[in-house]
Figure 1: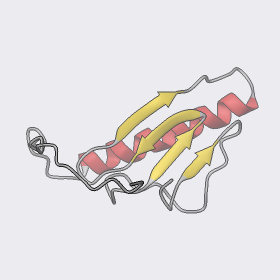
Figure 2: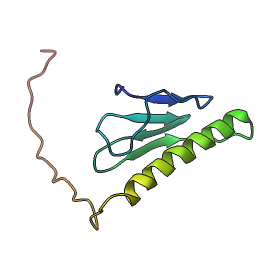
Figure 3: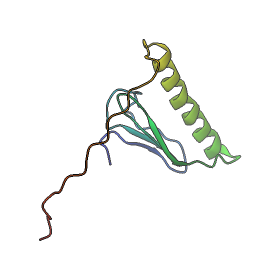
Figure 4: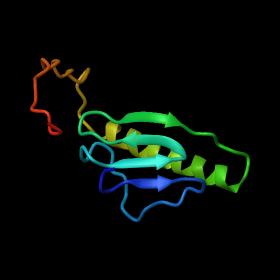
Length: 100
């Protein structure tokens, strides 16, 4: 797991290290089973999140909003291209079997 992972399982307690959108290719913020995987040109979302009607759900919803607000704020403050260029698919390569 990346070094500055922030997990909010059950509750939504935040790690002291802030999730800074587009700052690196290693940061992850996880809320319930929903992960925001940071990247310098895109943020990938994986998983799911059930927001329950209780204090835990409220904490998770607030952290979700805070994370999305940070992403939007970063995008709005940037000089954005029309679209991010897709990396060309690299041809597969053979590697030595590490178990042989």
